[in-house]
Image 1 (cartoon, helix red, strand yellow):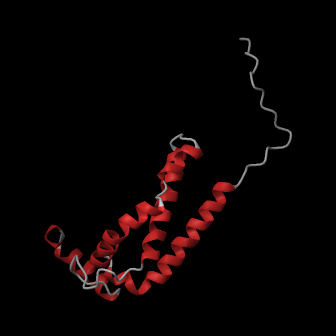
Image 2 (spheres, one colour):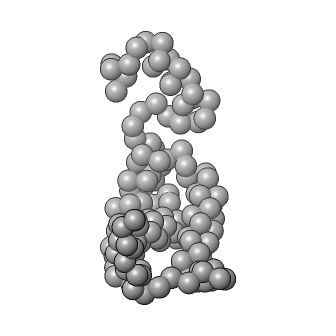
Image 3 (cartoon, one colour):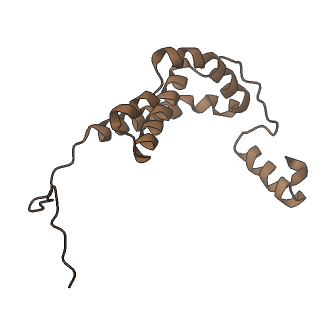
Length: 137
């Protein structure tokens, strides 16, 4: 990656990474199980919620879009590999995993509450089922 950057840009990026405690290499020295399973599950819950929103936005029904959520069995199956990859590429986040987990859980809970909201009908607005055709003038 560094060889595709101008020297000045590479120096700025390296300085930024150093200031924020991120090692320059692509992999960290964090142990494979550095991230708690709860953090991984929260991540997959958030991703599943976003996938549901995306599916509904694309025109799918809310009920059919629920298939996009990760099941507990799927999360259990994905957890070990995800922990290893998070430790490998996100090792500097280990010290912030509690904060990340809390943020993800709060976002997921709020998203679930928003999804359960029902829109109130607008007072005074009547939408006919079969509108009358308009006559040309």
